Image 1 (cartoon, rainbow, N blue to C red):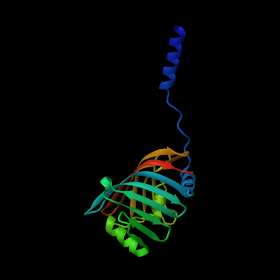
Image 2: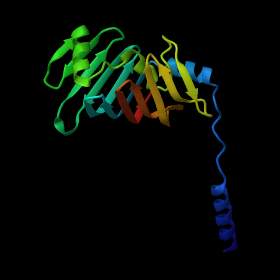
Image 3: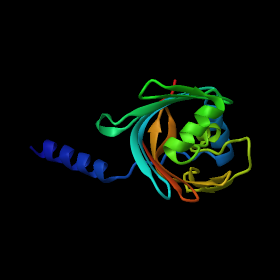
Image 4: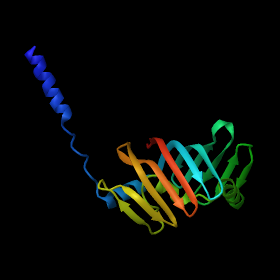
Length: 192
């Protein structure tokens, strides 16, 4: 009986001790590593609001190099849209089977959403790093992760991170430009 009590006491003591923190990777190294990721996918929820409108949708995102494939589904069967952005040209398919390309797709996205999403930069912002194509202002936490990113008139706030495939990746993001506000909660990341 004493042996069992001794083991229980040791287990309880071990459980009370905190785990050693994960090593912190310096930001320049971490940023370069994340910016080099060119293939990933995730699912989550999106809420968007402009000065006059708003919507929410489930979101499925697949990234292959510069090509983004985004599926938005509105609740209760209201509709949805699929956006394909190949790094230069936007393609839009709506829930009614209508398909638009290029400038017509961009105009329709602007009408549907009330703003034009920054698709070229989003592929990086979603990973928790700035788009390397333009200058940015970065604010980091003690673990060398972005808390605030300001780039191309957008402010991106990172509220929470999750670990996926050995990386700390965003779980909650809030994006803002003028009256446009986006909130994104990522439920599942997948990296190759």
